[in-house]
Length: 105
Image 1 (tube, helix red, strand yellow):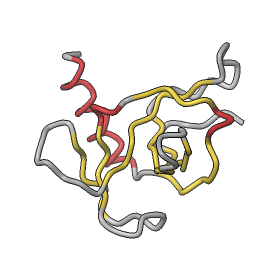
Image 2 (cartoon, rainbow, N blue to C red):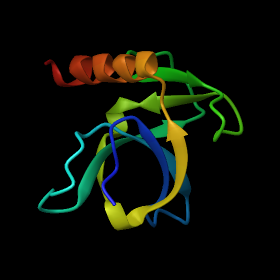
Image 3 (spheres, one colour):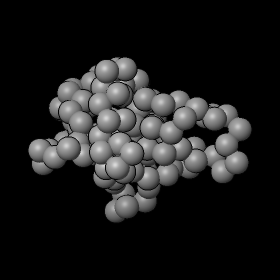
């Protein structure tokens, strides 16, 4: 399984048993050497920063949520537990814009 950009996945990374949603931001690469996806965590805490993108209340979320690009991390494909859907293209572009801001690209 190779996750695709914009897909929403739930993952348990072993941090105090906290399972959370992530948005995949890495390119689709079914032959990736390390089977890792770059992903940004989804949070319900909004701090009004350029690093957060409002996602609204997408079907897989219990409440309005935000993509936090400062939390960018790599996740093993085997840690992806539950597929939650796809971020709409306009929101994905906002996530990419926030990442460009964060990385000065």
